[in-house]
Length: 172
Image (cartoon, rainbow, N blue to C red):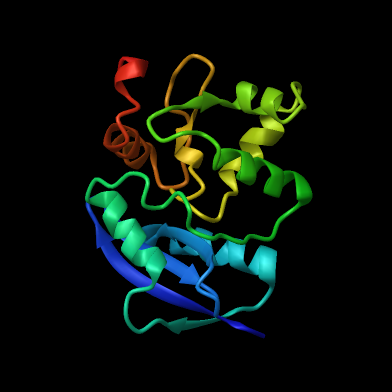
């Protein structure tokens, strides 16, 4: 069993848990107060995993800190790797194409994937995204421009969209 390395660091909206592998590829990013969800997804996708503390900040942590300090594109090129079904990975890849400062809907994302009737499946895949923020599931909203569910909570989603300057276009 290969270990994942964990870093814990503060952000303006809560403490984050960042998991990377030996190549410093991001495997998971979630909120400390949602650690049970993170551990559930790890078990689901990888089986038993060994978590080891990471000494010193990784490039991913430095990029996340830069993102929170206002460099909104600092996380765009971070390498990520996830397990999951082929459809989930397809949705997660598509999420990374949503530009910073913009939002899309579940339906629009389903159309973009060539599966216009798969809105709910897109929503389920979006909800099981193990790499918060870097794989920007928070940029997906309801068809009526409402801030629908977010694994880190709606208030964090609202904060992230404000931080990315996406909310004015929604009138929120």
